[in-house]
Length: 69
Length: 143
Image 1 (cartoon, one colour):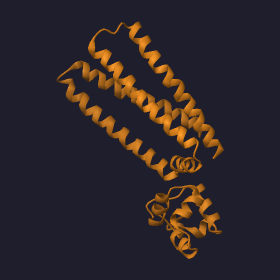
Image 2 (cartoon, one colour):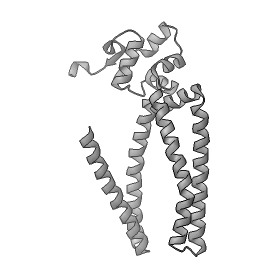
Image 3 (cartoon, chains in turn purple, brown):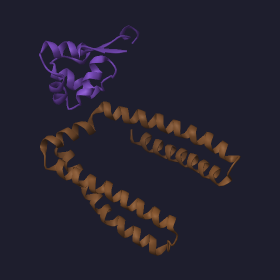
Image 4 (spheres, helix red, strand yellow):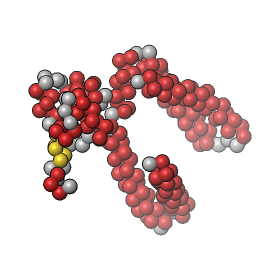
């Protein structure tokens, strides 16, 4: 299971879902699904999102089973 | 984005050529096979008219999109959105599985009623299985 801090970081930076969607070249629905945890981003999208928030993929996405890896 | 625009322009050109070829093919087929009965004539005309309507709609839509940057970006996002692609993939996988099951059950049932329908359904199942194998082989060599 992968959780993410997209909503948290987006709100902290006062960015709307539409603005984030436009920046990442995805639909707003994709951002909503990502924030709700209904959809897991691909490596490319994760990389783009991490770049947008000036952070790393590891910090933005939390792998819950990390201890078992 | 420029790559997407070129791709869309190429698609539009191909569809335009097909749009011009469709009536010619229909008339040629009608003359070649000497379609006399009402059913085949009606079917051919219906398919031709329906396809032409769809093609004309597609062409008008593409023409409008190609001349509007905002609409072009919207379509680009819609078509390249990875969630939409994932949904399409999942839907195709599930629907083809359900279709095979339905065709399988239908072929068993129709086996008791009509041999022709049963054989047709079996042919559909075998064809889809064959296409799946070929497509899988193609992608396994590509990835």
